[in-house]
Length: 231
Image 1 (cartoon, rainbow, N blue to C red):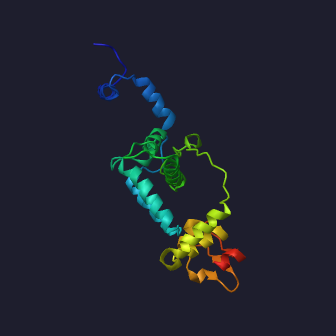
Image 2: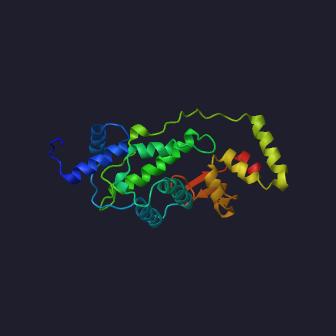
Image 3: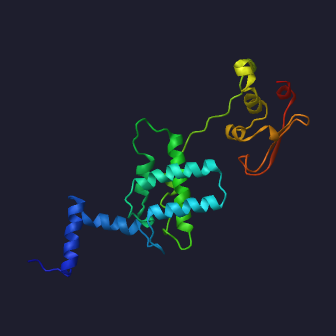
C-alpha cells in the first residue's frame, strides 16, 4: 500500500478520472478546468436557458427572421448536448466544435460566422442574466469567424437593361417592381420582401420603410429616381 492524504472516496474518484482520461495525464486536465470554469450564480440546463432566451427575445419584439435564426442555430447547438448539461459547463472548445462541425456538405465561412454570432448572442445573454447562468461568455472575440469582404461592383448599364427587360417580360412584369426597387432605390432583399404597395407613394416618388421593415430598425424614406419611375 502507498501512503496518501486522499480519502477512500477521493481515491475512487481519482481512479474514475484516470479511466475517463484514457491514458492522458490528470494534472493538465485539472489546470484546464480551473482556467476555464467559473461558478455561476444559478445552475441551469442548456435546454431551460434556451427556452428562457427565446422568450426574452420574443418579449423584446425581435423580428420573426431573427427569432427563426436563433431558434435554428442555437437550438442545433443545444441538441448536441445532454439534457443535463449546464450552461456554465460550456467551454470555448464546445463552441469551436459546433462552428466547425462536419455536415452533409462543406460549410462556408458565412454559415460559420452566423453560427458564431447566434451562439455569442445566447451565451452573452446567459452571462448577463440576473441571476447569471454562466460567469463568462465562452465565445471570445479571438474565436470570431472572419470573412474577407469584397468591394462592391457597379453593374454595367447593359446588364441592367437586360435584367429589367427579362423581368418585365416574365409573367407580365410580376417581378419588375422587385428589381426596380433593388436597382434604383438600393433596398436590401429582406426589406423588399417585407414591403407592400402601401409603402410606395408613386405620386411623391417615395418608398417609406417603417421600423419593422428597415434593417436599421428606424423609419427610412427613399426617393425613387426618374429611371425607376419610368419602369
